[in-house]
Amino acid sequence: MTSFSSSGDSPGDPLNDPWNDACRASLVQSLQRLADGCPDPIAAGSPVHRLRNLILVLKSQESFPDPAPVPGLTLSQALNLVSTSRALLTTLLEQDTTGFVGPEMSQALSETLESLVDELGRELRAQQATRVRGLYVIIDPQVTGGREPIDIARAAINGGARMLQLRDKLRDKGESLPLAKALQQLCQDNDAMLIINDHVDIAAAVGAAGVHVGQTDLPVAEARRVLAPHQVLGRSNREIHLLVESQEMGADHVAFGAIYPTTTKGGGRGPQGIEPLLRARAATTVPLIAIGGINAENVAPVVQAGADAICVTAAVGSAPDPEAAASRLVNAIREAGGRV
Image (cartoon, rainbow, N blue to C red; front, top):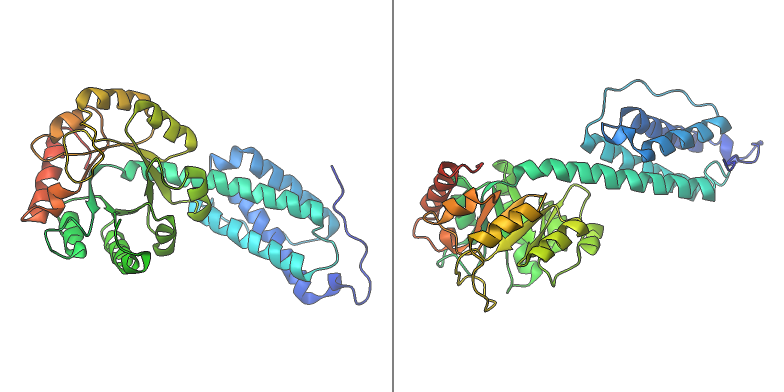
């Protein structure tokens, strides 16, 4: 292995500076806690093995006290430790000129921590898959029957919706942001998920559960650069091969439709029906969301075809009593055997 050792210290050397001493010790302890407590199955992966080797190299240069034993970390705690380690590494590179963390060690640590972020984020998003279920209501300011979007959202949640999506195609982002914040607070208070349509930056800004993109929106890989590691990404699909493509890109869940005739979203193409939905279910391994023209009267075949979540807009947003409409849909999904 390449040696990362520094030149010897001497009077006046930054290696003797108490602040740098503390920074180096904090970095090594943070890395050690991460390596020792990283949750399964991440702990068995190659990034953790690389991290342990890098820690040994750092410890060979200078004596550091071992950190106090800690119980196994959660995925979120491990991500926080990665962030702490990155910040300490950046600070040390800016302030410590001794070469304790030279260019090669810096690159090795940065790449290893980046790999850990990818794996921790992937595992966190996989855990979110169990939350993609039941009724998923799109909140569109243009589809409210003249009522406030937040009131439609509150009614949907009270009626049993477990997911909301903000789809605001016409207003500027500055106008959408207050509504996004209010919806995020509503979802947090009710253990529901908020998904933002298209606008990855708004999803990141308000801390939403994730974002939903179409075929012509920001590519999955580019959206990931903006989102936090735990934020999920869904993608719309009309054809089976696009479903497969979305999964290969790394989408955490996929939408398929329109299942039935719908006037909410144009496009000039007819409905898919149940048979293509069955094929979509067979082609997907991530949660499958069915969308388009679905209501309480026709939802049963959709659930029985294997859809994990049922996405609607007008069925709730345009209903005279949105809460009652949402409740009827939730009951119909449950009676058809779906998870709500």
